[in-house]
Image (cartoon, rainbow, N blue to C red; front, side, top):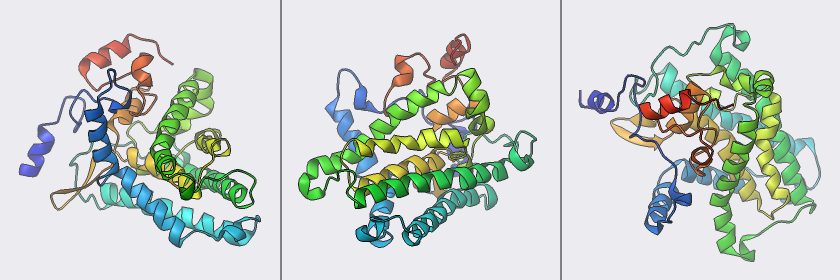
Length: 328
């Protein structure tokens, strides 16, 4: 009973569970600046167990144990490319498949910390194969994974063959470490810019509607996109052709882009096992976007939505305010 009480305290007439409202942004761009909030943010998200630290550990494991030799990647050979492809397919099945199994097949924590418990409209003609899970898996595995693999292969080959500059730990450890969180700032900027554009009616209808079939998303929804959107979304990686980086930065950037979007679309706030929080996963900020469409185009890293009038903080007041605004 105590476990259900935690959910009941957070319920509203719109959501089964929501975090403390108003949902806000990270303090990186607060004014006036607050070093105390910055330190708290760094402690909570980079120095303790979080999605960021998990992806960083996966990056390190991949680099030291599953990474092809540099001299082998200097040529575009099927041997190492097939290993990269196999590794990425296994990884998406572990993360997206694992979360889907825990939340929706095994129902390991029931409805605890689930944002929206309404039926997920799994069977509908709007989905490929008339099924949301099959639809999401199709677009993820048939479109998203090949595009992920293509970008990764081109970048790794470019680094290994000396076609673009690299930045080693020995070149400056401060910048080497700082580039990891800065990549998330860059990704947030890139995501907001293109995301706002593809919500224009004609682009939304042709491209972005594939992703937005999922009003109440789940883990396989995160990377389910039209091929054109996959290319634009992954093109955030092109920054590595401009700013010298290391393969560790590329891997982390990729995992944040792909596995991170799987996590944030999980539909649950937390993975809860044996009355303990294993990991925070979902993004209520982005879940609001999937329900209301005309809000929260960006990420919590940069408050673009606050600056440009599309911010929904989860409250009734924000809902009424955005309903009166015409925002593409």
